[in-house]
Image 1 (cartoon, rainbow, N blue to C red):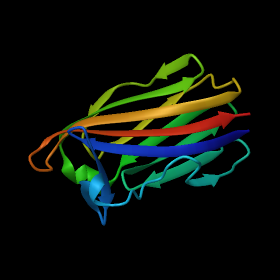
Image 2: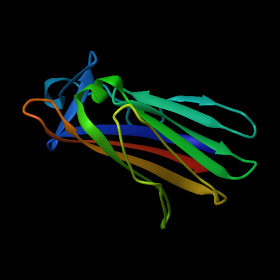
Image 3: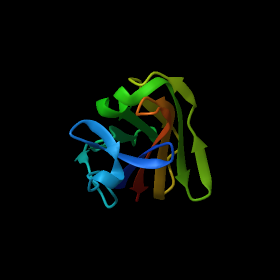
Image 4: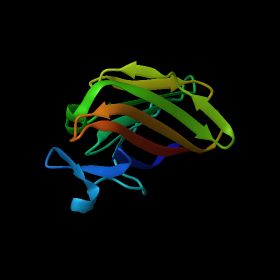
Length: 159
């Protein structure tokens, strides 16, 4: 059995936290936080062989799926349109999966802001808690311009 345990994101521009409000990126200090935090959030679809979860907040949306037939795990993440609009140039993406001391590094990508980030891996046979982390770094056009980071994490458990 696979369970989603939670999902959370954080957007920082030049080291300061920002949030999306009414489809606009604004400094977090100007509003109350609206994003999803742990504990669990999102939508779960159950299929005996391929359970999947969809989750989202104002920074983006993602999904996690497990195929029991081959013990393969697949994930995807899409940056929200509001955050895409402030990105200048490509996004440098890194993603990892953690299970105890085991770390799986997914392929690094330098891609456009509209890219659907994704990854997969096999050998998900151990029970326990897993954490998938996603990190996108980019240049932004919020005055006066600079560097941005969008981080997302979702935790899931195999029982």
